[in-house]
Image 1 (cartoon, rainbow, N blue to C red):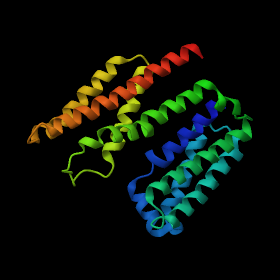
Image 2 (image 1 turned 60 degrees about the vertical axis):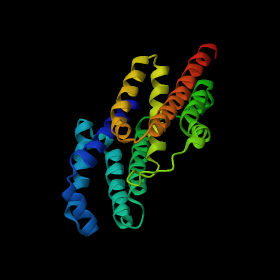
Image 3 (image 1 turned 30 degrees about the vertical axis):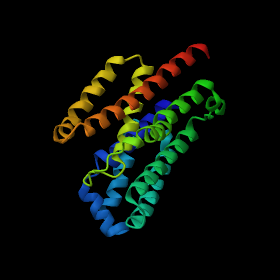
Length: 237
């Protein structure tokens, strides 16, 4: 099952990303179903599927299912372009393709989803930790450092960029702890220091430096604590 899914996924990635020039995408958006590149795109997908499946025509119905559905999904996407946020449209488009691929795999290699796996204690603990180092930690940090909130804001910065950077930072630290790769945390701190050097060098007083240090130490402390607790609980479960 996994082998077949990977083959079909490879064909999809090659057809949708590697062998689809920007020129084709723009032409499809402009001419929609009248674009010759839409049909060339579907043909490339069909050929890619044949290649990865080693021209085994036992999979012909799967190839037809994926190719025809790809045309339908892309056609719908073309008519929704400009009406729906491009990011959500891209996610929905790719998710639809993946679902069709999963259905095609199901036609040839029956499988069942082990529902009990979602109730496994280790899995649930992992979800709890991920939620803690992302959403929960963000709230905790906001509460702790709110008393030191700087009045001056950088209008040129991206909206909510700091919150997302903090979440990713803590996810990396948590992963390093779980993998017992403490050196990675040192590398992460060094990298952050380099990128923050410009902000710190422009600060007129110590406020910005202290604010960044407090935030960084709290963020890393929460992630490290969560990682250590995770590793301990795993040993006793």
